[in-house]
Length: 181
Image: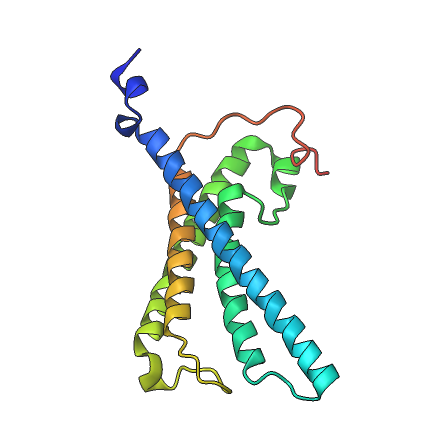
């Protein structure tokens, strides 16, 4: 047994995996709470509108901000789990060697684009109420939502960058994605 087998803190891959799991779990719970909030607001809004003829004030603001949190969480969870939609046409026609290069280019471009997006979101979020960044009905300030989206985009950028440097296990022969199914 090596020292890293005895102490998980000394093994960076175990620490990295544990951090990724906790991050994904935290964001999944956050997204789930946002989804429940969206569901609750929608049900209350429909009942109030149709049964009592009185729409819920600010329902659109609450749902748009809740959806922002849900999407931010979903982006990182999907990236972590590798469940974003992908079409592997290049591998089908050009082979795995070419795909390795195109995957690297795609990850570099994706990491750069999401990093720029994160910077822009943090910049817009820092302006806040001074720039009139509030919702239309009940004036929810956009700042924390910009920061949440920015943090998630920065995390996505780091996930893409980390996949450039870590070794991936070889694909299984029966991988349905490799067969185009």
